[in-house]
Length: 585
Ligand code: ADP
Ligand code: MG
Image 1 (cartoon, rainbow, N blue to C red):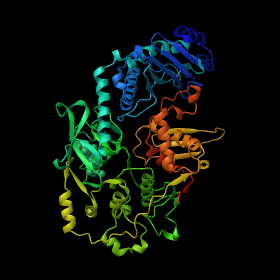
Image 2: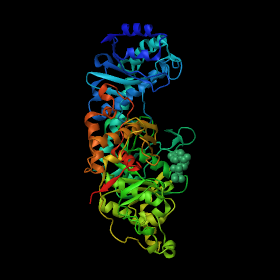
Image 3: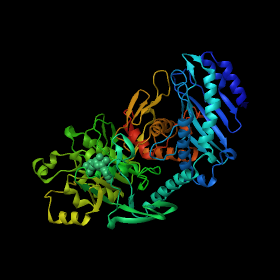
Image 4: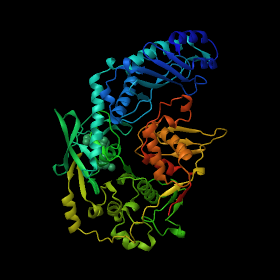
């Protein structure tokens, strides 16, 4: 291994030479406090930035082992350290040092959620941060002195300030890790407590704006307060300061398994509550306001998505008798309607083990959700392919054990099928289950239940490996993540805007690569989707996410993956327009 002194010399030597000469600094360099790995040098100042790692021995970093003593804590501390490194970069990095990305130093830091990511890795021996840097140049001429300032002066300061425990705010770190562990402790108890979700008293649900996931602070905010009848208490592994006192218990609203309606007047906070529940499948950072919104890990948001591709899904439980006798037991289309898309998304979620469905009337197809008495009178059932969700929602729970939480301000027909009815009024929830049931008894809907037959059994589908082609032009594998909801997969544009529980573009990046990896390793034209995404998830458990990068064996560490749920990997696979599947009957 070379010394930092030698790195300095090399950079001085490279000053003024052509950009390609930067390749000379690929390798490992020992600093007194850490080792710098320069894994990959970019081709020019405008190309994707270079990849480096800094590895600090625990003897220097001094991270308390209690803070990474188990899986949950380790993931939390790793996430915390991406944030402290990010902060250190902002304070120390000079920034721009030439053309293009020259001077850039970046780490893949998360947002309001705490996710397993590849940006920081902690082991018993060391902690490693994976960074992206723009090696400085003017045109194609190396700025060696600027590079030296970046790598030999700024970087050691960033490492010191961002990764060494004695430089960090201990209390903040401990609070972060404890907070995440508390949330996971609640999540792990939901099932045995008969709950699908929990919303803590005092939680702040509204967000700063439609474009920001930060909590709303300005103006008037109504903190959450559970109705007494739905209040439950959880004990926590770590003490917290809650509602003004130090405690190891937390109270809040438990949403029971079964069918739950969220009703209430327009603009009274219904969708805000549902959105918090959607994101409650992930832990949140302290101060987010939704730290105490915890949802079953396998809860899946479902929405209408007309135009999407559907591949051989048996949607006959919801849709039969389409015009021209189109088969709905293995329904395929390149251009789904609102209702067929929603039906397919539900069956695809069930196929991979969703435990709960989250729906909002705002994003649902009306004709999929309801069909009232007058419409039944006018349009004969013989001419209506749709069995509305209303007539299947109880069956989904009774037959498959899948709960539903549904925002429905516009149609009281659902009172008949709801176990729990929560009314939002002035941003506060009220348990109106009894009133709703009373109304259901006394005020008939006059509608006929439309269930021509029982919900058919789920049909697993087997994806065919040959239908997944990540090649583009001369490149055998070309998968680019352009946005949170957009992957260029080979020649194909994969649109994920309707997969609403994706929260981090690094998850999207992981999904693109995971589909490719799954095709190579697990799609043998026998394994169904469910087994394939489970195998990928187990691989993540065993080996982490580094293996998603096709170049990782050559020592390139991506540093910008975050872990997606198997449900989202399947959702993406289902939206790939080229994918072909076979039903396993
Ligand atoms: P609904 O779905 O009932 O029509 P929304 O959930 O969309 O209503 O909320 C309407 C508005 O109220 C949004 O701007 C939201 O940010 C705000 N809001 C929601 N909950 C609260 C709250 N607890 N305190 C203050 N404002 C809130
Ligand atoms: Mg709404």
